[in-house]
Image (cartoon, rainbow, N blue to C red; front, side, top):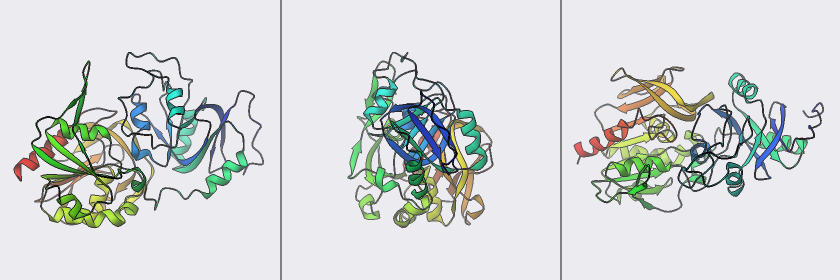
Amino acid sequence: MTTSVPAPAPWATASLVLADGTVFWGRGLGAKARAIGEICFNTSMTGYQEILTDSSYAGQIITFTFPHIGNVGANTEDIESDSPAARGLVMRADITEPSNFRSIQHLDRWLAANNLVGIVGIDTRRLTRLIRDQGFQTAGIQHGEHDIDGLAAEIAAWPGLEGMDLAKYVTCRQTYTWDQTGWVLGQGYGTQSDPKHKVVAVDYGVKKNILRCLASLGCDVAVVPASASFDDIMRHEPDGIFLSNGPGDPAATGDYAVPVIRALVESGKPVFGICLGHQMLALALGAQTMKMANGHRGANHPIKNLETGTVEITSQNHGFVVDADSLPAGVSATHVSLFDGTLAGLKVEGKPVFSVQYHPEASPGPQDSRYLFENFVAAMEAHA
């Protein structure tokens, strides 16, 4: 694989190696380390800090197609988990000095502090076309060394995301309560002081802004680990159950999550799922999931609401999808992607149970789909 690899340029301090043998030389960012994962690309033009801290990216190296990443610096507010779950990042242009009134740290220093390795100076157009045309593959970044053969060996040994349960690594270790509400300019985040509904959120890698959306609508949220049993969840006497986003293969996490979700559906309580939660809800209902060729990752994905006929621009991040043809009787599609026609939402006929593949919390991204949280609250009020 590596016999024809050219010598690195004098300025190179890092390398990106793909499973097919392609080698990119660049300059290292962040931690001086080595990272292995599935390489993907994200087309978002904003929100790089939210993307890097989204637990749904566990096991992945993110290629940013937008060239200017890091220019607004980093802060302590725009994070979706306590520590980044992504393995690394790939960028085109050097980071300039931060230019934003909310910045408190240069992105390079933030990456190093969070032990994230990155590489800059890569032809991301070429890399994105390669991923788009050939599909997902394993890749590795190394910063501070040029051991291509050693990195290639680690890449070959990495098992890939299919069959991998990553939720168990990013979920909370014990139950906690959440009362932080949405961010307001000049005020920061608020606090929920008048809860009206009790929600249990099952944490498969939940984003903080999802919890903020629930709290902002009057929900008293208890967050439980991915391994929580039906009895663990019902002990909180919830008005509704939320199934969160998360990383990895839904079928693998579903080994222990699906029986619990099936029991939750049968309980009659309102159930709302996003991303991995949507996929595992589908499995619990009898549908099937499958790996995509290169997934959906960006903040400008159009979906069609089949019930209203409207088009929504959405934020998406997923490499697995529910097979629409496998939906059983009594389960119907509610949303579809206008990019490729894949299933983007479902509901159970006659029950307050629904889910979507995309991210209505919009962090980062448009807020066209925030109404889904309102629908969940309305379902809890109707079934009180």
